[in-house]
Image (cartoon, rainbow over all chains, first blue to last red; front, side, top):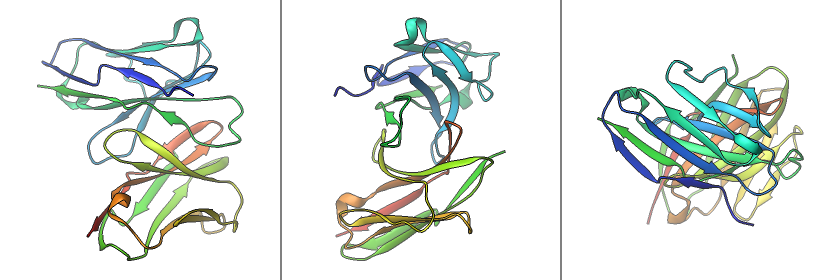
Length: 115
Length: 109
């Protein structure tokens, strides 16, 4: 089974610029998550989609972050404008509705550096 | 607000040692506790625990959940340098996972 694909792998931008990350989940996985992981901390959920609907976006800074999952498959996370504190690894994960085996499958992440 | 605390923050051992990593949690509507290993970037799934007192085992790794104490431990026996990683604990509440900040394990040859 192919894994969760993310791009780009790395991105360096200046503050106040915009940036977008892309994620393609495992085929057939209905649930998709975007996490932000700041160095030295655990992943923090930004947004959770089930198919193309938002389940939880309570921790998404909506003044600058946006995400969409058109057609319930791949997803894009955007930051506009970026701040220094947005420097982090952005992880995408997916899971099936039946999570009997447990756990999410994570992509390799995008490391964002804002300078 | 759901909370997951892991200890110790970091640990340095020598190959062959046994280590125990701790995870405690406060969560409403607990569903499961998960352990992940994170090397470089992507966390990889190790265990999911839902029932108290039942040990999950995979090779040299094992984990057990204590729902009464709201905690879990992850044991690694006969550690190898390849076990060096960040170990993350997460608890799920109706499909949403809250992660701890991890324990960084360094295994020296």
